[in-house]
Image (tube, rainbow, N blue to C red; front, side, top):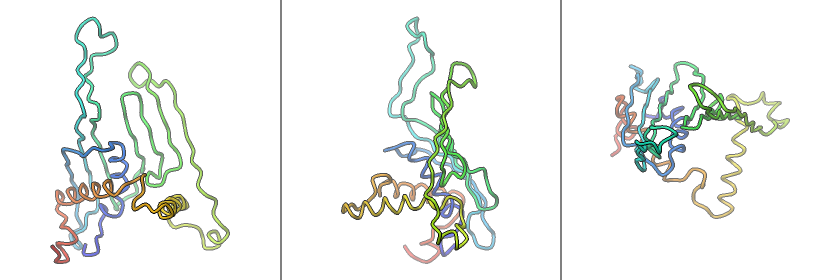
Length: 211
């Protein structure tokens, strides 16, 4: 724990980043977290986390004959994010984003996916109007990587895109990446700290005696 271990700091940032990116310029007004801690080390082993994002406006349905579509109230900008992460077992590791017109699924492995499925909703429960699959290829492994036995984690070749993005920012004199800003980073740290507090994990600074 003194080294900042635990599932919330090792694997938790991936689903949390996906959730907050789906609600840009918004901060959840409710956060609930449950989880289990290791009795010896005090680190969190698995966590379930739910966040509620408030609406940006409240659109009420027309309650007269002019409404020929539906009578469901609309809450633009609102949503609930349900996250699960841990180090005790290997989950399916998919990220699904559900909206009023369908859903998008980042296929496994969710922290470094190469396939996105988009299902467009049709009229009727469970009906699909169309389904599209988008593939994003990884760079081919160099001979040096192959001789070394490849990567330990799947799809690690994708870090090449991240490294290239950082290089472009440095070359342009930027202090942050527009794809994921410092404000977004600080928000995710704040949210994860709150989740850790709720499940009983002391902060790294508190364990190490810093204030």
